[in-house]
Image (tube, rainbow, N blue to C red):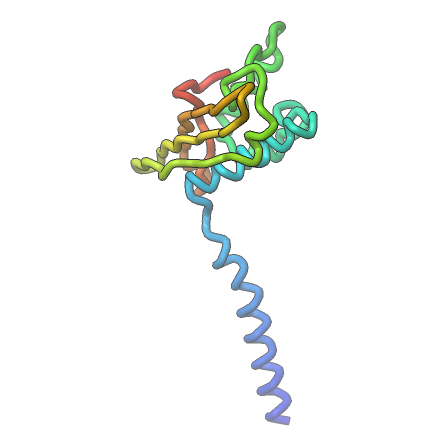
Length: 152
């Protein structure tokens, strides 16, 4: 009987240990990782002819600050909307950018960070360089500006 109780206790401890491991392994993303993941997701959506600003705001909110999301929503409601893509600072994009994203090491100061991202493209569009401002919001790094612009 004692042996069964000991085995049950050992099994419970093992289950609890495994259940806690993923939470511990899920460290918050660095500013560089946030920017890399965002541009991979965003450019993939554009290449799939999806509008990430209009149709995928729940996913978008995982990467950008609440302040920027509200600003984008207001801009989309304007009669003239947004005339250039805020996140790539251009009206069109190179499909190969999705596969050629690189980031610099972040410069951080308290809850603010800056990461330079390079989108390498072909001859038609070339290479696009962007300066991404991030802010820590609810413990996560989120994009708050592109090329020092806070609003679209």
